View 1 (tube, rainbow, N blue to C red):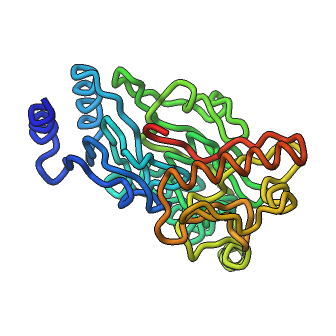
View 2: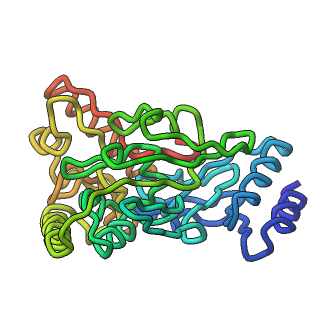
Length: 303
């Protein structure tokens, strides 16, 4: 069965685009995760549509992966198909005061292109470790800015393979959510709308935000970024710190001493360690403050 399915994918993508039993620790910023049954790297919309057709025919679940930030993959891996849309679809094109980017384009690369074109409004995203596709799904944000502030439209593919262009105003973007997430759309491309600015000022602001990240975030360790959503009226990191959990450790997973909103992999953490640590943190904060923390990190596989 697995050999037959691999053959179908290989005929479509070539051997270089298909991996079987691929360790997901190679593809997540946490550096954690067991093997995926199939790991596919398409290079066109047509290939993506055909992958979805095969998944339907074979009754295979699938998951869309960018650069693997904001994701915790189970130690047992993923029984299904990982479709990676990353470096293979990362074109960036400046069109006047708009930037069109493939779903796999890194936010840092788009921010760099905006600066080079003297366009302002995207500086906040320069240090977010993700792709524009993932950012559109969850309305990524940092330092007071969110993608919804600058997004113009997205091109998506629905589960049947139909391509739709959706204006940003119709995406119902809220805190870490959007209609893309709810409908299960697959982002292919996004257009952001910016304003003309002073290149030197843009560069200076990006540098300032970068220095803040380095000084306040544990960038020297693998992590998935902010581990918990911000509870209304609170800061997750502050609640965790005030619950006495700074430096709290389960196996190789640890609450960062530098920023308690981050769970880090100290070198040999497994998904089970991270999940247990997160559960402990949620329980302790609930006990101490009556606030329920919600994970911002997505879980993939069995936990």
